[in-house]
Image (tube, rainbow, N blue to C red; front, side, top):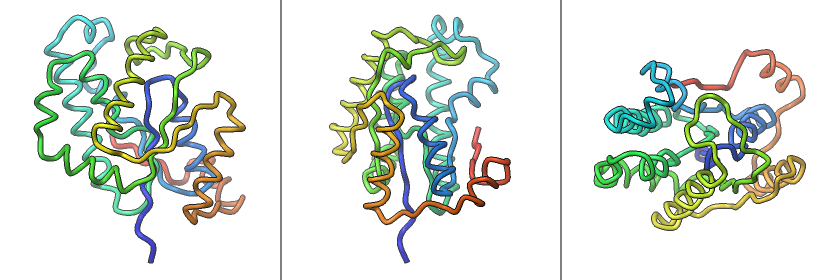
Length: 208
């Protein structure tokens, strides 16, 4: 029996991670772990202007996002696709003062070891994709580039093998995904199963 396949889409905000994660979920019938940051923000009832100005609130938010990502993945025993992994550490390093605390947390080393054994797709930024969505702070192009650089640094620092996805074209992105998953021995689900998923009866795991 093949071990569960864990697929991570990593990168800065506004790079299309969620769009591709949903494509993998629908095309291949792989459960999706949705982004936890939105749920944490909603629970805190925090506003973006507060997150920009209150460092204590920022620290709490980033700690909670880190905790929730670990929890969401630990609760999923089989294969999954996630539209992020350790990406919030890039934001923590840029916006908060807790990165040192997280870096010495033994759970981080264990988690990164798990990520290294998964399939990591690193989505690179494009100006055309930077559109404000009312949730994420710092939707300036320069900010996206800085976060992208920090994600790259984390990938290299923890020796995480990754496949870069650099094209803006959705067609080329999908072709890359299909080629990689085909080489990994992952088969597409039948059209009827894809229709069932789109009708809301399966696969997306919301751990907010």
